[in-house]
Amino acid sequence: MGDAIRLDGKVAVITGGAGGIGAATARLMAGRGAKLVIADIALEAATSVVAELPDAIPIHLDLEVESSIEAMITQTVAHFGRLDILHNNAALLGPDIAQADGDVENMDTALWDRTHAVNVRGTMIACRAALPHLRESRGNIVNTVSNLALQGHLIQAAYSSSKAAIIQMTRAIAASHGIQSVRSNAAAPGMTLTPALKAAFPPALRKAVEDETLRDQLGAPEDIAEAVAFLASDAARNITGQVLVADGGCASHVPGIAQFRTFFSGEHA
Image 1 (cartoon, rainbow, N blue to C red):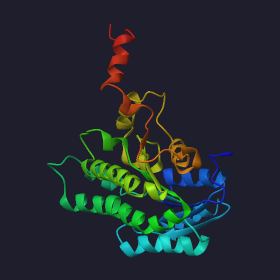
Image 2: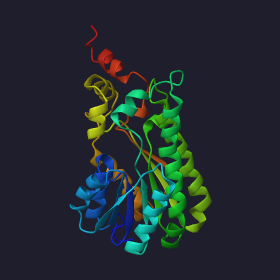
Image 3: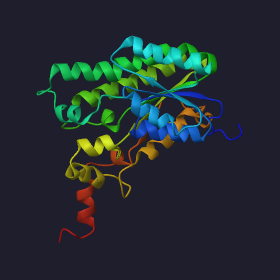
Image 4: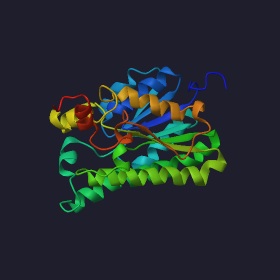
């Protein structure tokens, strides 16, 4: 297989590539030889990321508009002649959205509908448009989901349920298109120290999650980029239909581990 983690000659589309996990993934993939499409609703920011990369183009993407998603794939193939990797990373998760996304009893229907329209419907359309090209290139899909798709929480009912739906979509595509040599996987970050997260979550809430993390700190965008780039590479050629949880071990243990640490360290005395 040679250096199977390399992405030389591969063409990758990264949605939500203008910042955070998307931009970190773009830089990592470019460093491993990939040609990139940075697709984002913030075209100016996407253009700034492209300026750092050796072979990349920016594309404006609005995941609420079907024609915009389809045009992203069409423009990619027109420019590069192929498509090997679709990284569906974009999601509706600005500070205002995060603060409004609470429990189901108090859920605003419009927020619920928009979250699922952007996150689930938008991802589905992107996959649908990309699949004929991925079949031709024997390529793959990597979806960014969340460890919240695997756990219950007091907040973010709309976001977490939309990410759970994407996990099932990931598995469905793996099942239906695996025989056509198309792989489909998901990376599930935990709380990741992106600029958007820092704006949306108070330090006290971040500290609560950090206390439940098995590492000594929360993950950075670069940590998630490594997981995504691995799944997209030939090093993961025998992996499909899977969710790689990259949350510093937060979802892997009994609840309240921070309190157990305190108890067994003798600090409770």
